[in-house]
Image (cartoon, rainbow, N blue to C red; front, side, top):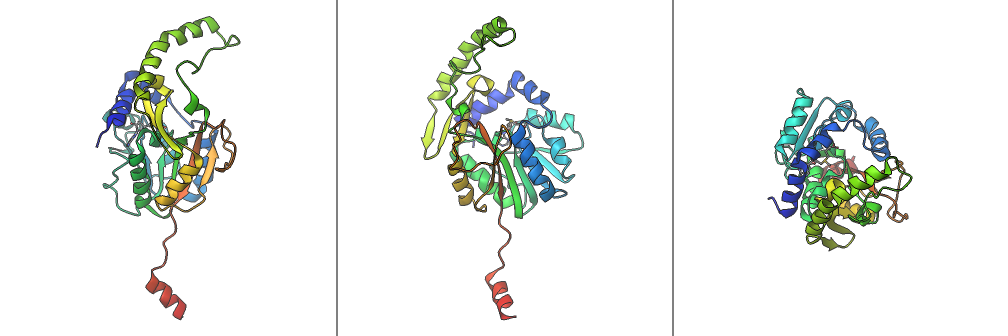
Length: 283
Ligand SMILES: C[S@@+](CC[C@H](N)C(=O)[O-])C[C@H]1O[C@@H](n2cnc3c(N)ncnc32)[C@H](O)[C@@H]1O
């Protein structure tokens, strides 16, 4: 199932530097995540939770505060190991978000893929994740994930304009030297990944500045994301929040300065079967 994008991203996350960084993270990533969590908490408290792409376990305590019925998976064994060491009593398993066959249909009240983890897979893999999340959610359950904005600043970053130190910055000279020192590796990774760029209507798979451009990720417009969720069977009109302030956004807004979105999609409540509807109509 592994394709060149998987191979690239898995090897980048397996680097000691990336793994250590993920291990250093605690709490919420940004205001968008805080806002999404606040909206979801009263709806999902006590319900079974599945976390996809747990990494080194940053979100485990946040999610287990909502429910003790929690399972987390990651497709990298070292991540699973790290999270198990950090939270020995948590149920953490090796698994790929594109294949949730280990879990029964309608099992969870909440499925989570935080910190743009869903963007690591290609277009086809993303469709599989949406449909697998939909399958394992119970009717009325929620899928919460964050995703990079194709119209936003991250999609425009290049090695030559990324995180350039300014003269007003503390330790400007040291930061400039550091930036120059890392430039060749950033440029080489970008040049290699740029050749793997793929584009479609409202989406693109392209290099991402995180980890020195050694990640290849999927960017989406908000409109495309809403359509993809609809195609996977989720209700229309998901809750959409921008990441910097946690404000609600709509696909028709000017989103040029929004880096990423938090998306909360809901699986429709079960429709009564036609025979049940007929019986109800007859009474
Ligand atoms: C950006 S890290 C985020 C980790 C963690 N959720 C956090 O917020 O700190 C993305 C994680 O998703 C995992 N991942 C990416 N694609 C995956 C997939 N298809 N199945 C399972 N895990 C995946 C990676 O191994 C990595 O640990």
